[in-house]
Length: 212
Image (tube, rainbow, N blue to C red):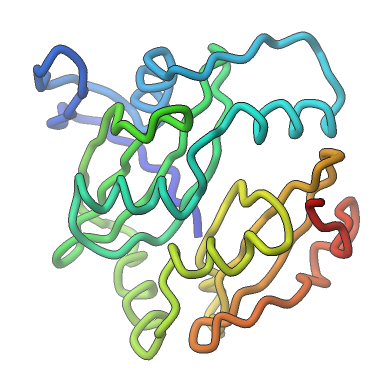
């Protein structure tokens, strides 16, 4: 479950740059865009097809999903719920990590995919009941988001890990990109970390593709 956090009021946003923390009125998308501008990975929008774009992104991202999650958790304690390699409109590439903190507190942390440095973060209180659903889904889980990212990496370069919390959650959803740019979707079991193809998303994706 990738949370699209929107903050309508002034939030305390930690913009990691120059050692200053600034209070800004922002949305989650605005914060991601601001972090992307500071990313060491800047990609040109030259209207490439999806496969070429995917290949360019995974080639440029030196920091893995698992390492990005680790960096985000070092910045904000809690449970990582999703990680996504995100190409913002301004061309900046970032890892966007959602973390469930204490109680109903959510943290969104942006990590530089080139250096592993935390570029920014913001926090909000849960108002949609997402925290309760996530906590229930992960109650008996022994596989973390980081574990899922490592397990799915055997299938290709991981570009996203997300909790499948449709009410019967038993897996993490992971997306990988093979060497030719083909995307594949996988389930990673919450207990065993076993990886299996996501047949429900097979249309438009190649679940058999693996990175060479």
